[in-house]
Length: 380
Ligand code: XIL
Image 1: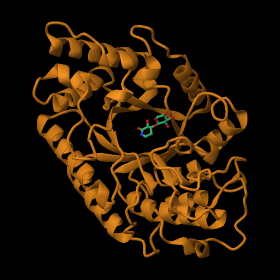
Image 2: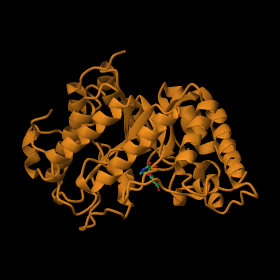
Image 3: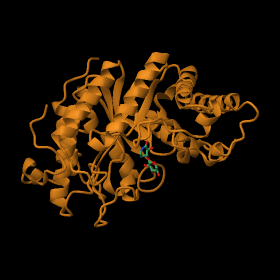
Image 4: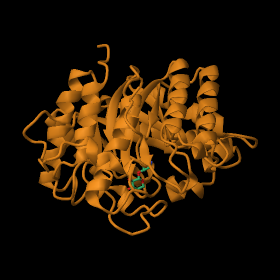
């Protein structure tokens, strides 16, 4: 693996970068999608409807130049597709899919079920499942999966079927209105199993993915263990699930010390176990939280780039991984700017993505490019 010093603590990371690192746009050289394609990897990003992203021609052009695959940041979530019961709203997702298809860009689906109750449509939590709640919940899940999968059909070749089912605090499966209705004891595994079976029934062509945000740090050990236990249980049940989506929101999320290589070692053990069970891997939502890096932009960008290289060199070395998506392309549109769970204490805008607000390439873009160029090629 990499001998480079590890990531976020490593503020001398500036030394890694060419002295005169140009804030070039990346337009002149090889695009990320071209570099990825040479390795049998698809590179892409999440994109969101509205101004600054999908509504902005310059941002769309950047995505078109760099990306071979996109995912809707919010527009295919149940909450977005059916904000009120029986009042579907597919237009924003349809517009993105139509644009992607026109540009020859693939699109993956995120997500059919987001496990934490607060991320389900509010009306689902209040749903009256009737005298036989298990049948009622199954009926509702079937209707949702059927409607969504039939609507998008084969244009979506990969679905995050279940998102974030494992509670990082104790490694147990999260409960919600659907799991409670399906079984009075512990319905979560039944509900997850059912979600995948329904997805397989209505999108038999698709890669079916479980997506979560476990990381390699000590604070994530219960999270990793919980995901492994769930994947093992689903395997035992013969659930049609093909891959684990590694969200990869890396960087600092709490106050615990960065253990650098020790965290990467845990991460490697985890990926070994997941691939050992026969699951494929994807990087689904990569970005770097820079909250513990200094305000100085050159140092911060270098620290972010170094963290990315360490993580990507290891993660992209797994031959079972063939899709790599970022959670946005430019700092100013990152969800981290408004996500108050792990903010910068100095309140400065975060710099978690490969382009700045003016869409100029940053050192992170170079780090991503170098990791892709260094990775072993995938088998066709
Ligand atoms: C986030 C979006 O980026 C935000 O705009 C939205 O307010 C909340 O969801 N894990 C996931 C994504 O699986 O769906 C989340 O996206 C980020 C964390």
